Length: 153
Length: 427
Ligand SMILES: Cc1cc2nc3c(=O)[nH]c(=O)nc-3n(C[C@H](O)[C@H](O)[C@H](O)COP(=O)(O)OP(=O)(O)OC[C@H]3O[C@@H](n4cnc5c(N)ncnc54)[C@H](O)[C@@H]3O)c2cc1C
Ligand SMILES: Cc1cc2nc3c(=O)[nH]c(=O)nc-3n(C[C@H](O)[C@H](O)[C@H](O)COP(=O)(O)O)c2cc1C
Image 1 (tube, rainbow over the protein chains, first blue to last red):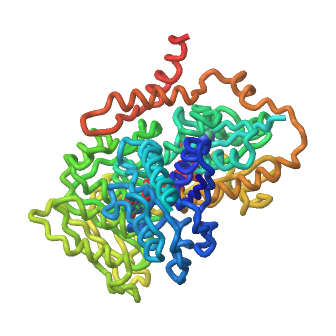
Image 2 (image 1 turned 180 degrees about the vertical axis):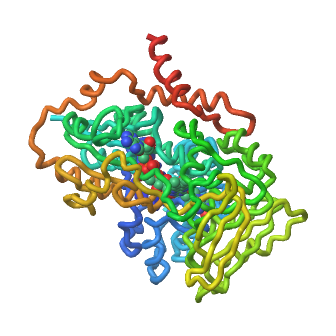
């Protein structure tokens, strides 16, 4: 299946996770990885399944590389009806605003009529798990769901 | 022809630079060199021990050495001219096609006021290195906190220092803060901490989350002075809001009072018999002065060059400092290039810019037969490698106390014992 993977990052953990997804799933699916900093919400291909990966900063805000995308989306009436997406967060449970960056992004996409597939899962930088160990099974499940949806359609 | 690149400094900027260079050109051979036997710079030795989530960025850097073919060469001190060290910068440039200086800025900036050398006054760099068990701290004479402390500076490092001096021993679960440090701070039973900032609160340098975090420790009471200074009393301002949040905390029992004062400059430290007894501060316009009794004062007013690499000359004569170009085949990145401002993410974008410049220059660089790392291996037998760090890492994780993540080896000697001897016995 064709899947676009879009990341928002500051220290690069989210980008590295996307590269890991590419190595793990790139043989079975057609993956394209993009930095949200270089994506305009109006240009999203609504027929392609999108996976967002984003960390959180400040007080539960989006990371710098996701901010321009979010601002553009927020200030526009871009209609994302037809777009299905899944979203994975990176965060740190030391912060009360754990995972709120990815939450903001998810809410915003849904508000613009995109459809979220499956739960948003957040990797905790405090924990022992590596981000890829949490994200791989999550990704496989989301892709299976997206495939089932497109088969049904 | 494989280009040989030496990045000096295994902190965030050096590691991000290697990462970005490999994305530009996967054929280069990269060695990251550090004067310490172990990698990661301030991620290991600056970022607070109770901020493990931030330290976790080292997992990204580990991958360079574990999977991406970058070589770590530790325990090699690079210097210019008369500063000792193992090898001079010029000698290193002769061995490699490209040398990048990413050695950070580790010296504490001085206030330049009377009494700064009294026993009891300490720089935040010296102190946070000690708290992080940096091997240079072995010989550092650290003041022991008493009942009344002062912190000068309002940046995030000052907030780290304040948090650690005010947290309780049992609040370090999941950290790698040495019990010896936590216990000596707890034993002091600090009663009052004065935090002095030059700017009005609304434009202080700290991030509001750093201030909020301090309020999480039980038994602290906060006095916030001078909030009405200038036009910075705006309650919507997130910094002011964070401070107001602290002021509302009503502890059942107060073990320590923390007083924030804004718009004051330090004037002098005074003491008796060489020991600090008070800090004098004044308003910028001299309209008011204040004496704050204290037995330990931490200056957290930024960092400067340790002058061992002739940084000022290199920066002054730089060909294109904005992109990190110092001279033919010589570059700078991170704090060394930009000065001591900016967080880990800032170094990432900075290093991406410098990597692009290097990749561009490599295309036009004449052929060479620089020996690279072989030139170092032929000359030195005390170098440490990434496998040595992995042994140290494993040892530190295995030997830690209940509730802690690691127990850092505190001396270069202990690190080298594990780093160098084991290689011999396993052969
Ligand atoms: C106390 C403190 C706490 C901080 N906390 C945070 C935080 O929580 N979050 C955040 O984002 N940022 C934080 N920062 C900022 C962050 O640490 C810096 O932005 C970053 O480390 C700068 O990276 P660098 O690679 O330029 O320098 P450094 O990290 O200092 O790395 C320089 C490396 O060069 C080596 N070196 C120095 N001289 C030589 C020599 N002559 N020969 C060989 N090697 C040499 C050093 O051993 C070191 O490993 C903190 C800074 C400090 C000082
Ligand atoms: C200054 C700072 C603020 C942060 N704020 C939050 C936060 O509010 N909520 C959260 O879940 N994680 C927070 N984090 C943790 C990061 O989201 C986490 O470290 C993540 O792995 C970073 O991924 P990235 O490298 O892709 O940016 C913060 C980290 C830092 C350094």
